[in-house]
Length: 206
Image (cartoon, rainbow, N blue to C red; front, side, top):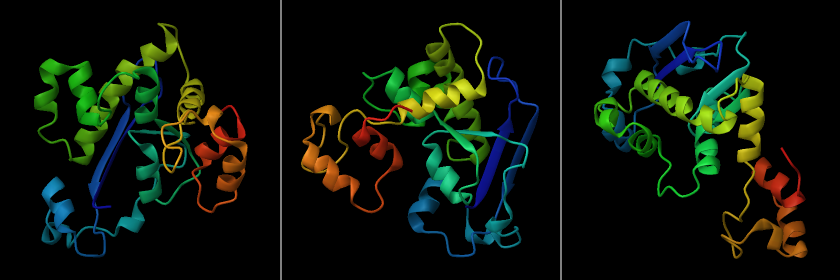
């Protein structure tokens, strides 16, 4: 991690942030060229920054919202916190889109301003702000206009993360309900299987 940012939002029905954070960190190793080409932050600009290991989510925070949220969660050390994934929600709620990247969803929801908002798309704070815009469009699709809670959104996100089709292997794109029982048993015995895929193979609800 070289830059971290967050917005603290008490009420999912208003999405007004009451606190914010943005800070750069020294990753403790050279930045790869592919990463440089994405975020344009040079190693020498981070030399005096604190080590990435110093970052921590404030202890009173109960929910972490992000686009493909597990990536960010793993980078910050897998804290014990409930995670709400806007990527999973978008895939579940908008099944006919051809792309679900954060940038694509901004063009889907706010085409007239998306280009301007994506000029700094790989700045951590801008990424968080863009994710907030997407969340603001997804919540009404979940709630149908009714008030909600972070807990209710987390439950909906958990359900959205359980795959309905096989994501890889010889049964790729096959509905999980149609996968042979012996293959399910074999796959459940393999190491490092995604926990949400395990739920799908076992027929468990979120």
